Image (tube, rainbow over all chains, first blue to last red; front, top):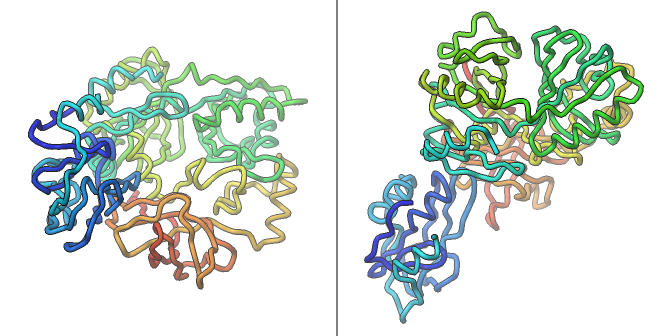
Length: 119
Length: 350
């Protein structure tokens, strides 16, 4: 299992969050297999913590992309639509998904709590 | 447990539970493995498959009775794709049957169906001079599939759907020119105790280790049915587009009456290929609609790694199966345009 970056916050849905930037974890990416399609929320969309706001398809399956926090989408990563494999190759950097202006204080895990979750 | 479990673990495999066994789902990634099989060769562990041995003076005549195909005239050293059906005509399993000797056949079943096939064959064996034995524990199965496979194995003259004795790493094996990928390729039946040596010898010849995830997209592109998806006891070989495997000229066989009746009546739902334009793939279970009404359901679907667009197989009601027919797939609440195409989606230049 690849290392869990210590500076990020995590959800139980295997997403990470840093200063409003959202992605999926390496654990999620490797569990899904090769990702072939990503549907992201539109810029301007309001998202709600714990509620699906997009989809991630691997060759084998479809998974909901669940918003990690309440907020409004202010930017999406244009690269991942064209190259969804970035989520497998580089989930914590080039494979980021979208950025939200977070409202309130989301309920998130720190790296050690997330590490315990994926054991 | 596959005899190759440790080998897969050392290769970094992700495992999946498949019919009660831990089998490799992927190694580095299923897309790279898929492309390796299409462009060069992949190496698969298929030790989960079930093997039954049917032996005796009546073996051929018995299989003609129990299965939908004609096996009595199959030459020694050749294989045939066939099916075991219920009296209702519903498919209990799809099988590859090899004739190893005049009075000896090897029946290869899907892992999850091996027990059903064993029980039903024994039941149908009443009155025949034949022995049916579940020999799955005696066989490991390793496949080398892809256009480069023949050069890696150097099999000598071995026709498509042929089988013969061969040696790999000094071990006696059965080498069959069969597969489930739509490419030229080979399946190597060996003793479980020899599996590690055989795998290592084959891997040294350059194929890419390939897991069950890419096997699924490969067979889907090749338009091949998968039991539990396109095939089940609720559908007949005729519905699955596999009438060619039913030897209707045989006088009698299990399921014959029901299949003859269905063929005469017509009007049944059939399996079709669907292609969609978006990148969202139809998946198993999604409704297929025409003129606002549900006319069928998807059985398998994925973004085709080779073709770059989604492909799917679906059962659709009579009247909606002609190539070119425009249909809609309900992809999680969104209607996606689809049209019927002739299977397979992909065929090799073999």
